[in-house]
Structures are given as C-alpha cells and as structure tokens.
Image (cartoon, rainbow, N blue to C red):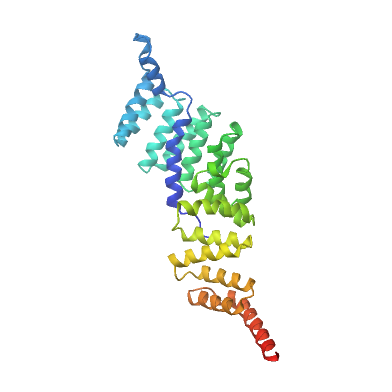
Length: 309
C-alpha cells in the first residue's frame, strides 16, 4: 500500500489549522458585533489587541501576509494570552513558510493557556504540517484529554496515528464515531488501518466510501480489492480489479491478486496466466514462483485424471 503523500498531509493540516479559529469561545469579531448592537459609548471601543486582530484579519483576507503577521504579532504583544492571535499568527507563518517559527508561537501560547483545547489542536495541526505525526499525536492526545467527545479532534488524532503507522490505535480512536461523519481522508486512513489489522468488513466499508469520492485512486481500489478478498467476496474482487486494470493496464499487483482469486476458485490455468502476466508487468518472480508451481502441479494432476478417464 502506498503511504500518504507529504503534500496531502501538509495541505490538510494547514486546512485544519485554519479551521482551528472556529473552536475559540468568543472572538474579537463577536465582541465587535456585540458592541455594534449595544450603546455607542466610549467603553464599547475595541481593545488594542482586538483592534490589531481586526487589522490582521483584513490583511490576511487581502493576501497581505506580512501586514497580517505584523498585526497578529502586535495583538500578542498587547495580550500574550490571546488564543485567536496566536493561532492566526501561526497560520500566516505557515503560509509564508515559517513552519518552525509557527510552532514556537503556539508552544509559547500553550504555556500561557495550558488548558486551551484550541491551542493544543492548532499545535498538533502545525507540527503535522511539518510531517511530524508523532509530536502531533502528543498534542492531539492532550487536547482529547480535555475534550474527549470532540469528534473533529478525534478524527485529526486518528489521521496522525495512521501516518505514524499505529493502525490498531486508529481503529480504537474512531470506534465511537459513526464512519459516515468522518472526513473522506480519515475514512481512507481508517480503511487502510483496518485492512492492515485484518478487519475486512471495516476496511471495505471505508475504502468503498473513499473510492466513491476519488474513483481514479488506483492504490485505494487495490486496497479495496484486498479487503474484499479477505472477506471472500470474490465477485466484488473481480469488479475492483477490472477497474484497476482499466486505469493501470500494467498493474503487477492487480494481476497477482487476480491470480489468487482464480487459484482459490480452482481455476488453475487462469491463475497461472494471471501470475505470468504479473511477472511480465514487474512482479518479483521469486515471490510468485511457489504459487505458479502450485498451479502447474494442479494442472498436471487434472490432465492426468482426464487421460485416465
């Protein structure tokens, strides 16, 4: 199975970092809206930190990254414990390629707000964008300790666990969540983790969901074929392999699995032909040699019986 691409990990983590602002309980924007609906008195004026945040949001919306970063930095100087300012500054830093600096900003903010789920989740997103799933898992785990029923956070944690290769933990982490509510990429992770743990039904359910979204993902279609093979649904395996070969005619893995299906069905001649095609497409001959020999022996026995008759 093909591991997830770093670029996909990075883009998804940055998206999650952008969404982390939505977790804050009361943003400066909400404060401003409340002021507009109240009496226009001097006490209703924006605080210096909120004013800096407002300028930062506008600059960020305009794509003026340096101005946005300066405004968010100013907001943090004025109010070091401001969660939104820290998350916003880190987000802009990631956009401008200052990944390590973004993580330092969030780490400093967590020291100010150690019980902030929003900051812990953002820190997890940040280090995940740097392809450090182990550290991301630590942050997500701390955040879940404070908010165990947060389904979005649990999904992010499972994604990082999958990237770390902790497949049984992925399944356990998502056990209480309805799979249909998960993001598509997390369903792919759950499907592949379930496949590696031999849970064919769970793997099939989630890989099917991913393939409906990304029908041209050949690697996922192969994994779906493997899950169906484990579930002994050979008719569906053939459908999956047909789709794989249509998209990638020289898929050695597809022809090898087709050989397994044919051999299990007692179709030794077709199995041998599939294995031979797999070798022609680049499969390791030494790996398939025992299976090919088995098919040849079975064919010899069958022909011998036919001659006796």
